[in-house]
Image 1 (spheres, rainbow, N blue to C red):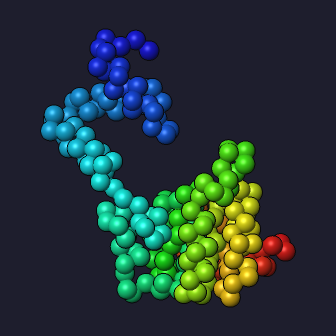
Image 2: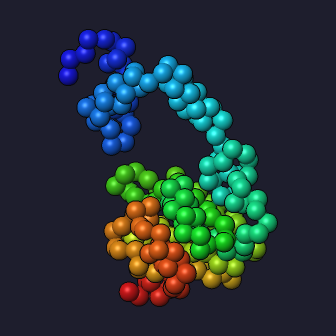
Length: 205
């Protein structure tokens, strides 16, 4: 792709680094920005810069937040004895959109995947185990994607906490095997949370 401007080329190259954005789409987006008032581009640039500089990760659940403890964890109306274990922040957003879950979350930051070089030490598993050891949690809901890596992560965590007096459950298989949580429709996801099953039962299926 030939560019008449080095500045345009640099902008397209950077834009194309985003997931799902190829060079042609990046060029279309950059040209769109050029047609907008300069202030609009400034607003976008400032918003992205402020997000990158100021965003935090909740000290309790590892969700993204503007403050040290996110609004979900600090909400006294949430059930802090019920923890939903998810892979990343997109899953929190997906479950919250159903309006059916009133507990708290724990964001692992991924799932165990030896093929990708991701082990238990690379995830927020130790802090989850510490929460269980504190004795305040009554139930963990495993809401990881129903893939081999998701199931492996579920089982690893289960083995770490099985000696503690805590209930473990997993979302029902309204979510198809191999599906990512964020792509499930809200009704199916909500029902999968409500109709969760004991984790031990999922090991026999």
